[in-house]
Amino acid sequence: QVQLVESGGGLVQAGGSLRLSCAASGRTVSSSAMGWFRQAPGKEREFVTVMMSDGGTYYPGSVKGRFTISRDNDKNTVYLQMNNLKPEDTAVYFCAAGPRVNNFYESSRRSNYDYWGQGTQVTVSS
Image (tube, rainbow, N blue to C red; front, side, top):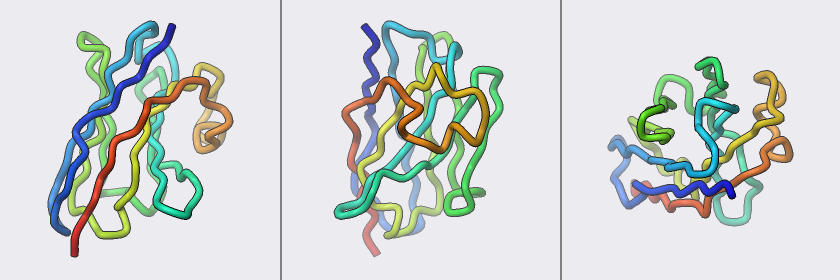
């Protein structure tokens, strides 16, 4: 059984940083695409970033240059380093494993991910 557990969320002032972690069990993080999504109140779940099994990464314009995804294969954990946070980054952040994701186009669609964590709240105050 695959389990993904996020941690590291919290309250931070605008301009600050947070690092989220996603610890995986039942599946190695390097065996499939690992994505981060976020969902703000009243909004749809939004793609944040992905790391493919070959290590390739993709960031949409809203987070490019501020967020960085990485993984530690020994710890079977994926990280999301978030710098220069803005109030509009406030959301619940989810990690997801996508064994059916084959390219960056597919990586942005949440329906292509089979396993999800429970989410961690990130709140950025102005």
